Length: 521
Image (cartoon, rainbow, N blue to C red; front, side, top):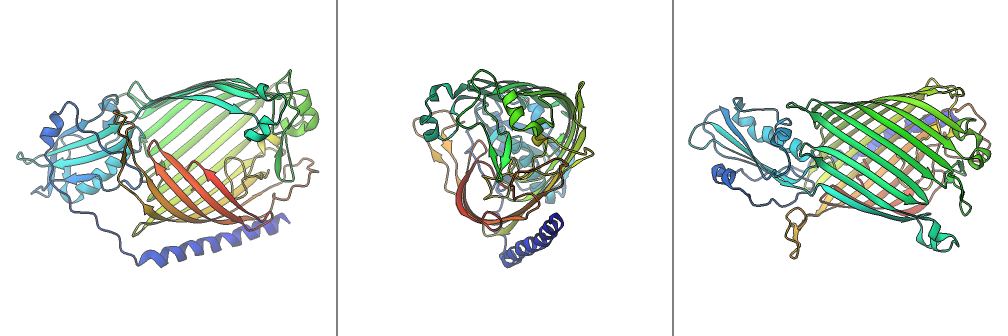
């Protein structure tokens, strides 16, 4: 049966690709809309301003914010690189992203494309609402380049107040509802010390408790080529999804544990960041983990930790990301490639078999002209070496990666694959809306772009876990497929809201409406 399912998957992939290529060639005849001719700008006055005028926030697409003055020669020397608007962000942080420096000689014909590539690197630091690149030869015959930026609000405190379960009506119907509240504070500084470092803290009390602190320095020193990351986390919950029944997660429902926690997790991590630019980064991390489940959870599913009630393990992971998308939050052009290899070594007197996990993901984004964009993404993961896997380690589709439309279902297995594609039309991109009663330029201008999206997904989870699975779950070794229409709203602070109407085509056939808060491909 599983071989037929994988054959179905591999037969489905060419059909999906053919459908995508059909969409591509059907729109290929549409010509690209040419950019308006660049106009000369006066850089000297702007660079001398103590407080340059704020730039309007920008959302995708962001590929027209380059201005180049007329230069008579074919090659010209860079005399000065200036930055304006970076009140908190260190200039060294910005210079490390550029692929040219003072004294370099640049080809004038290639200058607009070169400036755009560097402007996108600065924008994709995700520190600014907008980045404008300007270049002028002036009267000296040498090139002066100015990057104007509009900084974001970097310190973002978010109160935590949630109900368990998340459905408000279900929470209110419980007699012990006031004991099932989570409350606390989530605090993030996305530009700590002005060096694009990130500090994140979580303090949460109530039904579920969480105490976390993370520090991420993507690059240190003048060249910012080597960085570090550290973190510590402690989590306790009185409820737990402990098994899959009829392809749905099952928890303790109306009878959570009152005096003990269903699960407790602790981990500490640290590692290096090897960074060429914001577009090419590798992360090497080492971590220690400890997990413990309650007697009740162990009795309900002894395979949750593969016959153990408590386990400890060491983990090493290497993740390399090559991100050449025009914007990271809502990409329209470019490509993305990421590979990850993780090895988990269990320790202690009683231990599970060690195993490795390999993940690959590739996405391609194309502009078809006239506001049309095509995207395709392919991902796969497999677990190696271990003869059997715990229930907690066998996650396939339906968790962090899913076939859209099957949001309420999950599938466990040793390996999984996913293909997604979509065709987007930029339907509306009005001028940014000014908020009159707010004076801070970091928040007083609201940009918005609206896209209509048609998409199709297909995926499969399979592979024996070498342990008894008596429960009636249909999704493992079955091809999942769906089609849908979506409305995507893109605004500042990398916020994306996707409203999607989806029809599932296999196994559990249904039509549903879903809301997401990130670009799906």
